[in-house]
Amino acid sequence: MALKLETFSNIKGGNSFFKALTHPTVAPAATALREKLRSAKSLAIFDPDGIADSVGGFFNLLAFRLAGVYVQAIENLGKNALGRMTQPITDLPSSGVDLVFILAFDGEKISRQIAHLLPEGAKVVTLDAMRLPDSFLTNRGRYLDPINFSTNFAFFRDQDGFHTRIATTNYWSSYGAASPNLMLTLFDGAGAILAEWVQPLGPAHASVVIDSATVRHQFGLPAFTGQLFIHVAGAVGHDVVKYALDTWQDDGPSLSCTHDANAWPADYYAGLPAPRDDERVILWVQNCLPVAIPSSGIAVNLMGSDDLRPIEESVPPFATLALDIATLLPDARWPEQIEIAADRHMVRPRYEVVRGARTRIAHPNVERTDLKHDPRISRLSEHLGKGFILPAPILPVADWRSLLLPTPMARSQDVLPIAAIAYDGLGREVGHHKFGRLARRDSIAIETSALLSESGVEWGHIELVYDFSAGEEADGWLHALFRYERRDNDHVAESSFGSHVFNTMMTWGNEPQSYKGRAPGLSTRLFLRLGSAPLDTLCHLIYPASLPWLGYSATDVLLMDGRGEIIAMKHLRIACGGSVFWRYQEIFSDEERQRAGAAPYITIRDRTCRLFGYHGLIAKSGSFSLDHMFGY
Image (cartoon, rainbow, N blue to C red; front, side, top):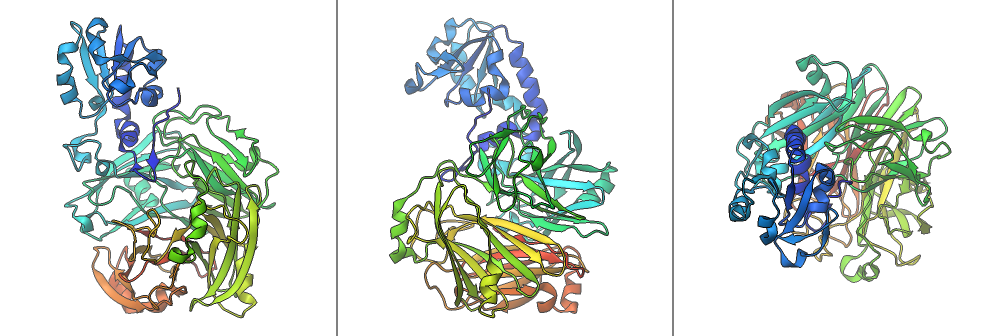
């Protein structure tokens, strides 16, 4: 039986029960509980919340000697669960079982309530048998409080001259966390634990850096490519672990960065680009569950095709598999794109493009299964103007080619009526491209830098929007992949993201989104990690507006040291609908950068509007990285 627990809902958020069941730290306790259930001569399942079928695969309940499944809610009576018709819990005394398994955490109260119903000599076990130690918890009185499961995974490698570095900040203490810690578990490629340790987060706003080379040296580890599990103990305010992940190569040309992995596994991912003739695309399949991915448990297909190509290898719990896409889709070529049927086995995966001596790492995105076209969106212009906007940089055209590839990101998106509009830094439209009504199978990339070159503009940004003159199919989940190529060498970087409604007072659903609190989210707090010399840091801030908002932003650029103290502050004024492209070493002096010391970072703060940002590193050789920033 497959593990089919709900993981994430865009209405309810993340499912802490799923995280509690699959947390790596409780995997040994889960195995012990499974063996205890197996040893029962006759087992009864008490399912007060109607989740038996969801967790049945995790505990392999169908393989045990089940006497029955008992429920509390009358509306759940007579339903099929684990292949049996559910019975009322009041029938338990006549069951004759020797073990009752209560499918609930914080189960002591439930155990007391049914104590008088137990057959003579029967024992009771609850999910508390696999409860995390109290040191991991913020709210010890309510185990499934989402704040107790502030967790995430990260691709983590220190092998063959490649290194990875996670960077974030202690934003939990800015919400009131007293002394939070990172509880860290490093898995190797086979899923074995290489190291476990606790890393204090320091004061509010302190810099947080986890470097693979440092970890390898600290624990005397062999080379590894695997994943790092991150749990924030004592978190407050945010149950999502956000970070920037850099990958680089010793004395080599490879340099890339990517966003956090998303904390919840999904059924589908999309936006994985097919290789060019001179490229290999490696999909890093990283099992995020304590149960194996079975053979053919994950498959890939070209977008718009029903020809699924399964991955035949089984992937052990928490293990990593490097899959060369050419082994399953040998004829796929850019700009074709690939869909991943992941069956909730992994969080948002990474992919690596190998081209000659260079590699680059990026990520696909979650493909929604719960969306349908909503014809009302096409009639919202009076209140939301342009409505949903997907903004991205057009980097300085003298040095870079900028490309855009629309990517269907919902299973219901059979057609996409879209257009791309190019703007200069002052928010003036300087170019326009109508894609028309794209079919799901269409993969059409355009060069957005060419839209600027025609008007003589040095740099700017592109906005992908719905084009309702071509069709009314819209659901608000508009995505694209943005690729950037250096003109003087063969280095490439890419990023992908989705659309939002920006800077309007009227709202649609939870748009304009807010990083914290109720929409509209008309403010900005973005994290910008900084590269160590000789690497410089580039940043492209965009002020998208669905309707005209304030004429100019009031943006503060705060240089923070490793302790979270402000070292220097610069002010930017970005035109509404415009953008600004800048480098760290251009706006902060040598003296200010020196005072920032080790592990500095920048906070982008604006209380007047919501900005969207992209960041990257650039070397003197021309190697560079680029991805979108995270807010908190």
